[in-house]
Image (cartoon, rainbow over all chains, first blue to last red; front, side, top):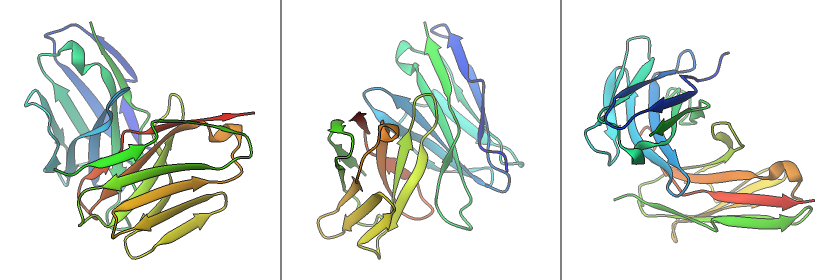
Length: 113
Length: 111
């Protein structure tokens, strides 16, 4: 069974630009969560999608948004990028019918210059 | 709001010694407590978890304890090996809802 796939792995953007990150969950998993990881802040929860609906949202500004498609693939978008948005963005999928274990992808390293 | 505090932020032990990482959660409704290990260049990976109806769980050299009254849970690694060196995250969640992570502990195991 393939794991969680995130694309791209690395991204460099300029302040003010926008970016879209993609996450393909494990086949059959309908829950997808996004996290921002920075050296000093650990894993900060962004949002969680289940069956194309955003169920939970963290404390991030409206510049951070996401969506989930009918095949459970998810995208997150950050508009008007700031230097502080530089981080590793991790996606995790879960099969909530079985348990709540989250399987993480390798992440997308975003650098804003 | 919900919060998970994790200590220490950095831990250095000699190979063969034990390592203990402690976490405290704020939401008393939390009922699921996973621990993740993150190696360099990889996403976090679940290593052990415990549910609120259990006080202790062990898997080979790894054990987790939970004190619901005090809202504390801990990870214990015995007979540490260099390959245990990584960043460890504790987390707390309510089944089916968002998971809150601790800030992480960077463990160094010196050979």
